[in-house]
Length: 130
Image (cartoon, helix red, strand yellow):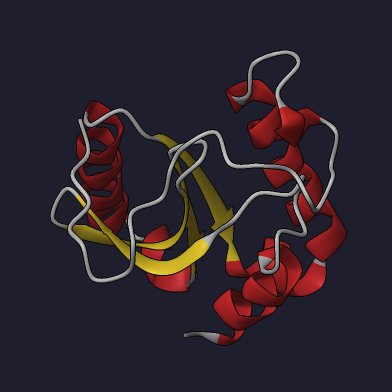
């Protein structure tokens, strides 16, 4: 993981964001996303300066389109946001979480003991997305 990914992982792991579980380096639709929240079907990406080129931005848009086409929501953060403005990065994630959950969901309360909306499969079993 990059330095920014490591920092973000420290900010979101152990259900620190509204009691939600995030996974690292998760495979979705033939791509690996930096972080994934199965309860919300939310993919998080942390992008470095390589993503600033027009060619890479085109590839990123297509990748994001494909990932969204299987029913996931998507949030892209920059290395700078994570490394130098981490409180803002966490607020952006919390805003995306709020947009993604239904009213009355246990994840709107920020409890670290919230129950999952989705039954997770045991490790080693395959996960198929709609």
